[in-house]
Image (cartoon, rainbow, N blue to C red):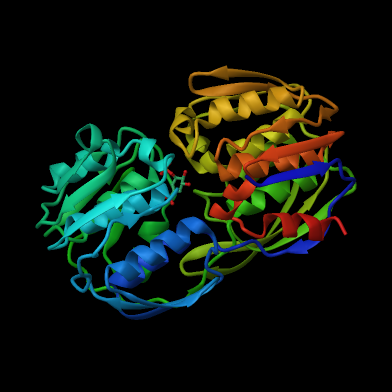
Length: 428
Ligand code: S3P
């Protein structure tokens, strides 16, 4: 078991470039594998989750050269994948498991997908139900709700489906299955969720259009390969953005961050809380907007966070909670029940963890209330086996008096293996 022990720091200064966006990296491998020709990506997310997707497609017969942050994917076209000789192990990665389930439903071979203990306890019916309506033959534990899932690929029919919860993973699983269905598949979202799949498909020449809340994709496209630099992950940048906001005297520049509006709600929420964040747009990368972000420390006030912004900040709520713990007044987060089915139950993890730092925090079924205070007290806290909880509590420790120890920190490698080095470099 790895642990990280930190003490209060004064301020952060300097600049850094965050690792590539995890969501975009997964999709580059998946769609690159289905394109005709070579897709080359740089600044690929070097975390364990995205490596799971690389290995999955290697086992499905795709030649993927490279390592670390640069890969070339020799796309084989829509019908070029072949049966894996072993179980596909998605590890901790919900995106790998759910998107691949959609993509492999329309193949003419058999697949089994499993994952680690956390992933095996996360709901899969949200994908297996609509895919079943398309004709997919999928079985799994609890009648297809939990991994391992077995997929007997078959010809799919197009579907018109309204998502019960806003989820880019479910939407993307259906969109990828829709590539293997003759005609138009239409998905309606209750609220907009991240649209990386739609953007990349369109950039590769697929036919995907948004009409109000509905997204329509045409089956059997011919996809062109796409070579690009993956934008920096705003979800990883968020930890340092919050640290620089809280610690007086900080000024940090974060280069080439993905600012897709369906991902960067954290910037809006922090600005509403009083944060000083300057966004300097730079060129699009792979159909995604990017910017340099300059953060200067400032005092924060509590706000209410609910409704349409929630899907746009869903992965940033652990670190937003740390910002709330330093804000004047109470921050209320609602409509965020999805946090209960992430890598861990993030509502319980955040509230229990912050209480250990001496913060007044209350759990709701769909969110939490956090009352800010001048000083946090250092604590020993678990990571709950969740990369974003681990990093959020390390940042909390850097702003708390005394010593903080975060346990089980190896999970940071899921999305941001260089996290501690990046933090260290900004304090020198
Ligand atoms: C992701 C979508 C989100 C997010 C996850 C990555 C994606 O999950 O929490 O970290 O890449 O599509 P949901 O779509 O299930 O909310």
